[in-house]
Image 1 (tube, one colour):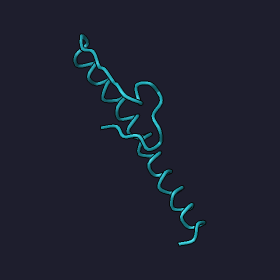
Image 2 (image 1 turned 30 degrees about the vertical axis):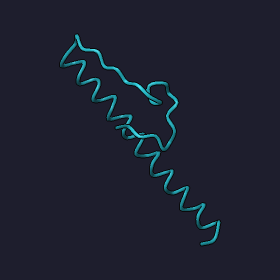
Image 3 (image 1 turned 90 degrees about the vertical axis):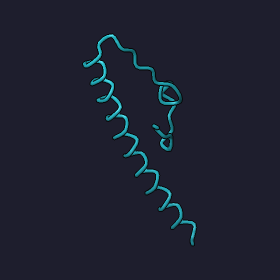
Image 4 (image 1 turned 120 degrees about the vertical axis):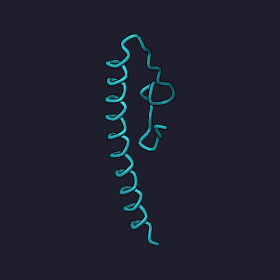
Length: 62
C-alpha cells in the first residue's frame, strides 16, 4: 500500500478516535454531575492521564 494511502487511513482513524474521546468526555461530565446531584456527599475521583489533562487522542476512558 502506498505511503500516502496509509497516511490518509491513519488520519481518518485518529479523527474517529478523537471524536469518540470528545463524546466520552461529555458523557463522563454528565455522569459525574448525575452522581453529585443524587449523592451530594459523595466524592468522585478520576485518575490517570485524563485526570492530569494529559490524555492523548488515543487514550482510553475505561
